[in-house]
Length: 327
Image (cartoon, rainbow, N blue to C red):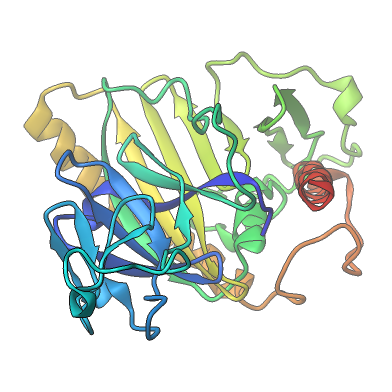
C-alpha cells in the first residue's frame, strides 16, 4: 500500500449506531459514529487485554470494550476503567491508535500512514458526480492485490478478449495511443482509441489528441478511486478497497441522471447492476491468476505501447511510495 493517503474503505451505510469491525490495508479496524453522526476509526484491539472492540457497544459517545467495560473517546483516549472507579487513575498509555476519517458521497475514507497534519485537506472526488445523479452499488470480493484490480480498469488492450461478448464486441483489437493526461497531481485521464486491425500499425500517443472532455474516457484518482465516464448522464465508479496484500473489495456503482424521477431513477440504477457485475466477473476470473500478486515497476512483465495507462499508474505509484518512505 501507499502510506500517507486518503483511502476509501467503506460505504456510509456500513457504519450505523453500533461499532463495526473491518480489515482494511492489512489492519483490523473498528468504526463507529458519535451522537452527532460523525464516523471515527481506530485499531480494533483493546490495549488492556487485546479484545476486539468491534464486539463492544456504544455508551453515549464512548466506545466500550465488551470484556472489562473500558471506555474510549473519539481521540482514542481511555476515559473510564470501571475496576478503578469513576475517579480512578487511568494509565496514559491506555489509548487506541486512531485514524482521521472523512465522509462524503456515500463513502468513508481514512487517512492511512503517518500522523496527519492539522491542515490536512479532504480527499478528492469526481467533479461531475453530484447530487443530480442517482446510483446503485454492489460490493464484490476479489482474491487479488488492489493494485492489480486497479490496473485491470486502466487496461484498454484486454477489452476484445475478456469482454468479447459484452463491452468488447466488435473485435477492435488495435489500440491507437492511448492518450493519458494528468489533471493535477493525483488524477489521471485515459482516452481510448481501439479499432479494427486494418494492417496499419497503432498510432503513438503523440499523434493523437485527447477526445472532448464530455466524450467517453477513464478517470483515476490516487490511491483507489476510478470512474468510467460514459456520457454526461451515465458513469460507472469503482473504489478498490484494500483488505490485505491478497484481497480487495471492489465497491462498484452505476450512476445515472437521464431519469430524474427519484423512484424510476433508483430502479434504473438497480437494474443496471447485474450487467455491471457480470462484466466485472469476466475480469475477476483472470485478474486473480496474475503473478506476482502486487504490481510494480520491476516485476518481470514486458509491457507494450497500449499499456501506457498502466505504465503511468506504476510510475506515479512508485513516486508516492518513495515520498512516503522519505517522510
